[in-house]
Image (tube, rainbow, N blue to C red; front, side):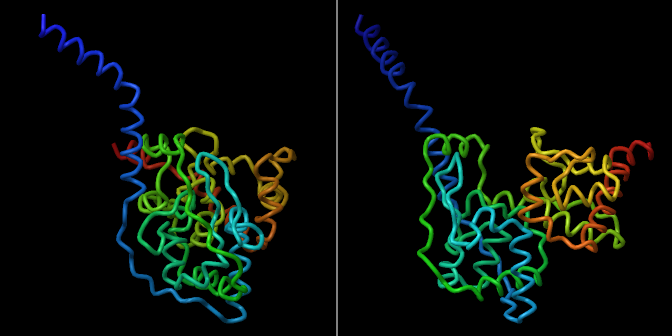
Length: 287
């Protein structure tokens, strides 16, 4: 009788504990990821303070979409769910960050304390050239420091669940695993670089779009002739002349500043990439 009472009591306790097991696992798993520290790679990039460097940096900041998250004055702004976060006040960080700290934040998704940034699309900037990072830093250094540093993000239940399940990942982890776009040789190198730099935030640096299909791969460029592609980049128009919901504001905010000599090689690379045989097709042909 006593044994049955003991086992019954344990069963009741187990049943009462069930609702707390999952939240405890989520908190512990997410906390271990949030507390992770990374090796800080050495950076030799220094700000290009020349007049041309600062001007080029101002253009690159706009083209890369920095103002979309950090605001037109780069003082940061509130971003949406699942993380309660404000994009960093970059003008405040100019007082606190060395050039190598900025470089690691941009291309590696790392804070100066070796923790990871969150929601920062560093995976799109991993392959940005040193000279372009130097120009961006030159522009940031030329701005008047202003405001206070942005507070750390807050991770509520929804965010922690996404972190624990791998749906929301640290920027540093994403930057370490991001692959470059397909290399089609030196003739297309310029267009490939522009594609990764300008399009990588949404379409990924591999340019294949999102796994869930919400963001298309850039093989869709096959639907556009050269003139239509120029309208896509400058106005956000589809091949049949419709205003695209996502591309239209991006064209107005960012891509309309692209010069003809930038859009033309971008189109050439994307169309050549879309028409090139895939690795599976090449392997099948060899067999």
